[in-house]
Length: 279
Length: 279
Image (tube, rainbow over all chains, first blue to last red; front, side):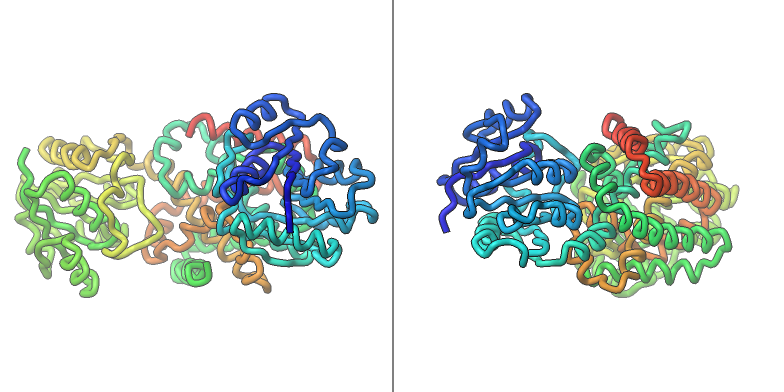
């Protein structure tokens, strides 16, 4: 299973870290980058993330693997632009939503595609945020794998093994429902927490007291609006359901505090503690 | 300013880390511990957190400093039990709420007391969770300092300097309002998030996808219900206000998603991003 050239569309945290991670595994790959942001292409060259920059999608078509690490609406747009590719070419997208992407890929291109979601990232973005161990020991969810060609299935598996990732297979709809609860809705909470605090009159005095709890809970409120607007849009129905489900729990808490139902509140906190046993 | 003996009531994460931190600064202190949990007193002796265990509050009265690191309701109860102490004795409580404690201290004892809130901690508890650097470079809020004796003010300042903490002075009511936003309400969110996810049918499949964002946001949902029930009770009014203020922000987000107001959602996320500039 030989991989020689890897095209990366989107030279940010995800695309950059992919290259740096694979370079730790082997020095035999050639990385070719595409990004509309000239600052990012320059940085990616300087950081050794790519060996070469190209200008169009067409220029990547001879790559063994093409990785799409752009926001999810961009992935759908790119999937419409590819046209015909080499039957041996493997295109892997790293989008955080999967159903709309999986369904949008043109039928002729579907075997070439592997739709995956690596459950990792940071609140930072751009090539300077990239680091070699971003993917190490992390989960990657591969969706609707039966729609990918057998060659592409093997290539993706090999790639994720090189990165030392744990692969989970899942239906794209199931993925999106789960991701809403475990990733997308928590981002909404973090943005809402940051805004609730910053709306206070004495925000500076409040933030002066920030300890580890607040820092951890507000970290992902620094994430890219461009990337997350797309995700909220593509996973809209599941997002609404997950937010409502959270709202119910928080309302329950507020009412117990209002009604001074302390024993009940303690039990509710004990329920939450059970997370400790399973995560 | 000589300090020789330090009594610690409550040999958990906070009390244990205090001793370990001060031992890094100097080996001249003698630590005397009090805790109703025999497992914790045993562990504290074994870990070198204390040199001696005593059975009653009376046995600590000759200490230069007595630190109260028990849940906030326990601090109020202890403040009623002290009776008369040496005028040079400094009692410092580390409670996460301050107004009810500051007001509950008997007038005769008030000059002896310094009410403080170190803005640090982890979700873990007990002496085994203690570590020497818990307080290092962290903020400690000292409340209603004008009610403490001048000797006690100096002793507290010296102690926090030894621990390399940054001291902020604040009115207890102001502290409680700020702490509700920056610490107490975020704990409610984390508990609610954990419960919202664990209520789902396919909780195992959802949690299998947990990345750094969810881990960070749910970490403090593992915190002690005993400790946090007390805090929610003592800071009830501010808690309700802070939760409502968060609920409004999250509702705003949900409605933008429902109404597909993506540009507005993007701006709302950009607002949250501003946190990056100030924290």
